[in-house]
Length: 79
Image 1 (tube, rainbow, N blue to C red):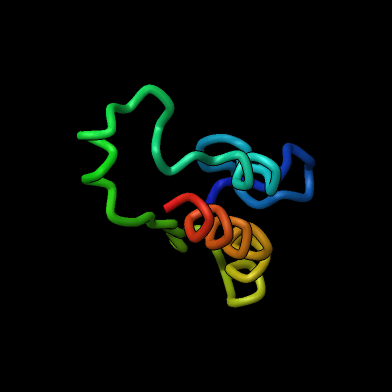
Image 2 (cartoon, rainbow, N blue to C red):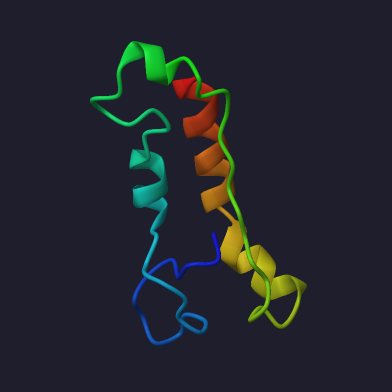
């Protein structure tokens, strides 16, 4: 969640790549093609946010929301 939400010039310092809200909604916690045997070992999901370049709480909130809500919905629906 510390990746930029879009490629615009107003986005914070780039770390990695753009991860849009749509990208998060399309995330599949269980990769396609994974065998059922292997898939049964997936017990949950995790969304990280590294704050080393986020200057304040407002920046953290901007980076995390609404993508965290989308991630929670994907994780809840998929498992």
